Amino acid sequence: MNSQRLLAFGLRFYIAVFFLYLFLPLLVMAAATFNDSRFPTITPWDGTTLRWFGELAADSGMWQALSNSLLVAVGVLCLAVPIGIATALFLNTVSSRAKPFIYALILSPLLTPGVIIGISTLIFWRQFGVSGGIFLTVLGQATFISAYVMLMVMARLQRFDRTMERAALDLGASQWQMFRRILLPYLKPAILSAAVIAFLQSFENYNTTLFVVGYDTTLTVYIASKVRTGLTPAVNALGLILILVTVVLAIAYEVKRRREQAAVAQSGQAMVLAESQEKA
Amino acid sequence: MFRQLSERFGRPVAMAILTLLGMWLMVMVTLPQLQMIDYSFRPNLLPAQLGGPEDVWTLSNYVTLFNNEIHRAIFFKTLWSSVLVTLLTLVVSYPLAYYLAKVATPRQAALCILLLIIPFWINEILRTYSWFIILAFRGPLNEILLALGLIDRPIRFLSGDGGVMVGMVYAYILFMVFPLYNAIESLDDNQIRAARDLGAGNVRTHWRIVIPHAKPGIATGCIMTFMLAAGSYAVPALLGSPGSRWFTQIIYNWFFEGGNWNQGAAYAFLLLVLCIGFMSLVMKFFKVGLGDIAK
Image (cartoon, rainbow over all chains, first blue to last red; front, top):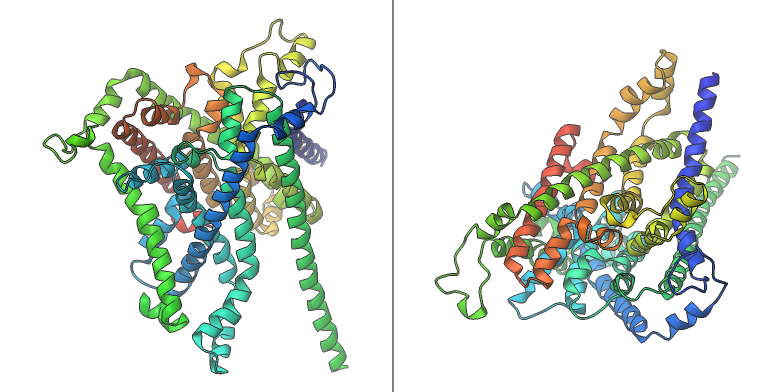
């Protein structure tokens, strides 16, 4: 039994070290933002300053890159969300001998390295005279982000009770009304989560973007180029801001999800309660 | 296919579904890949020569790679390093995934998963950049090692493959943890208890019960991690040096410095073949199908 306890302790210790490993680098990066040194580091500490935030705000290249990133992300959402929903509906409805092949094709962008998606997009559009830029970045990113949206919508669609669909049709709804009033509202939570994930995926993408972005710059491309040329702690200031936004978003998302779960559990309890009262 | 869709959703929606799916699979997925492969088998010609007598299929772009000793070496280094990154990530992730799935209370597990997701949402570039600061010549890691007296002069961590691999394990670990966690979580606790009651020790329980059950998760995690590592541009660009180039960097140079897209396409296609080869091998070894991977 003692060795079992030792093992459990070892596991806990390992978990603690793991989370330290996960967060320490980010904390070091954040701390370096406030160091009054020309090069981003925490050793030696040359005094505490906030000036790197000012320098960041004064950098017009950063603002341009940020607006490009947002533009690309919105474009990706407009493409990937409808494609992802359509694909999930297709897989959920159709049965055909060709389906395994189509399924493999649908999953292939998830298993292809991002650089290759970027390269093939760049080559394909060359014959139409389209060179790298915002437009190709949207297309390249949407190629694999659509598959993520499909997976998330599919997960919910598989739990859909198709008798609801039949009930709507039996009660005189048209197929369009059933689609619009029953199916889409049911899928809505999954579609919203998929949109959030798609937005983030687009915003943080680098490998695909690098090949299709041309002379434009997105925020990740901007950061990478800053790291290699003209690195100052202003990059850390940007990183810190992005991390804080991410943490707030992640926590808000999680809180919302848990509230929804709690609400479902509560309404379930209320139903059980009502039923037992009825019986009594 | 159209009949089944229109019976369920009506003609307009069915048409929209097929249009969107067809457009995606043809214009964005299939045709660009085929075009890339076609490019890789053609010589690099001036626009005026396109369609001329020299515009024929050839293996010359592939011959170039096999004749170039440096590129060949980088190709194999990328392969071995990516395998190593994948194995390291698996070893580091397994205890964590097991803890989350079977040891932690639901509350602890939920908190840990939230903590895991946060860095996952943060940009790959930023996560890599944070290691750039730590591993720098005059960075905190060297300062700590110097202060502890473990080394007497700073080490250039950023000039070999070591820094690149540390950065990759860090960047891609969550792609391993989550598939593993999902697979182990679906294992019935009673099976573990039964193994213990029948006298199996820890090692044997994991080897005979937990790991075989987690096979699809292990396969998925390995495939994703290998693909991300072999196809990574950000990590070697930030943490590597000219002496530790990655195959993706050679590809990039053919496109944007060498100006030879055909040569670049051939290299890119080889990278794709490498990833597909690794994937088929893993799927065969663990006896899992494509359906298991998408879960």
